[in-house]
Image (spheres, rainbow, N blue to C red):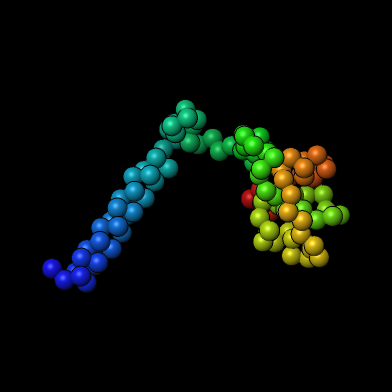
Length: 108
């Protein structure tokens, strides 16, 4: 067996494994009332507030703010920050302590 044949075979097997995983993981999407591993209905998508409240270590979760803004952003490339002159990297707990709320764009 040549090295090229082995490489091609490995690439095909990796692709097939990924394809099968996508098929199997996506199988429950169409079902209503299905439960995920945590006993939560898949049709009930949690709000951003619930998801952020579930973050265990708010001191180490990084968010991005501006000096005069009232919002915090989950990513420094959020389109809500395009006109910002200075983007400040801070923690989620510090941003909330300053009274900042989650950006509607980041909330999606």
